[in-house]
Image (cartoon, rainbow, N blue to C red; front, top):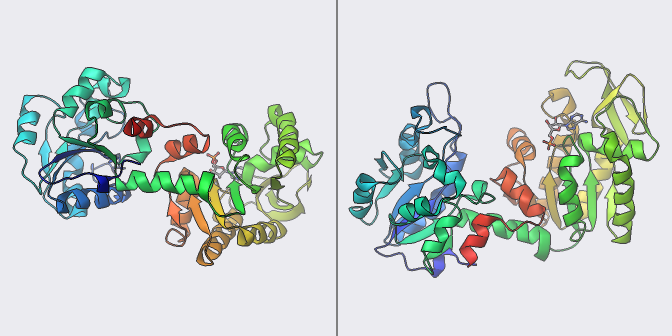
Length: 395
Ligand code: AMP
């Protein structure tokens, strides 16, 4: 891996693709600086090794130059979070920006205007990438959140930096965490997949079956499996088009010696509502009028036992409607069990928007080994795809 530590950064102008696509409130203030904090180790490393930083990012999905999406809005937060003064360039390319970059001194940080003010960015335009590349002498990609995009600043640009390009520290951590689950992790390896739909996780399931020993399937996607096995699921979430698929998958898993663990009981209600009266039923005996919204107590114990036996754990997707406090118990218990297993030496990786939200919300974020910052990029990695942003750093 081309890591930062392999490069000499003294007197270098390091052009870093960061993911500062942070949420803003109505007043244009940053409401969550997680992504900025995530890039700090790379920026600190460059500055303390005698280089300067030119930070480039997108923010939102502007159509042309739209002040609402200007990175000037985040300049103050970036400076506060990084604990250094930050100079702002009103454009990401052009003569003025080039001059600013040229006059940048070691130890200084320059933040460029939104890359997506130019449609050339998402189109992966070569000339645009070349203009960006002229701003720096070294290229670093630390934006895992956009590593699955073949954009000008995430992939195309790398070809202008022969040997002077590297993974940022965040990207390096993301890649090695996924590698631990997929290739080098201690056995038994467990994947926990939850969330709403089987259809959205098919490619992941097929790819990880090659790598894992256990697969827990929970949440809304479990009901398609249960119905396919002849269970009554009331009007729980179900994808009827995938019934045969789930049967085939169980056969395939058995052939590959992967143990699949499905829920055995369920908390169900008549309404999709936090305050709806609930009851606990065996998973295949959900009354006609009801739907399953959370894992039952026996399922929680069953899943917990598998988690505690595993040495490498991947979690993607909640195992109930955790947004409703009355149906969050299964997801909380799962997070707790992963934290416990981690404290006993297991490696745990949590990824995907909803599971990350759950570990944050329920306070497990510091008790798991790694929480991925990139939703789509993480999912595509699990699908076995070579991400353009990562591939471009290798050549
Ligand atoms: P996904 O985006 O596919 O990972 O799905 C995440 C969503 O699945 C969350 O919003 C959960 O509320 C939802 N979910 C989990 N379990 C269930 C369930 N039993 N019934 C309906 N939705 C569920």
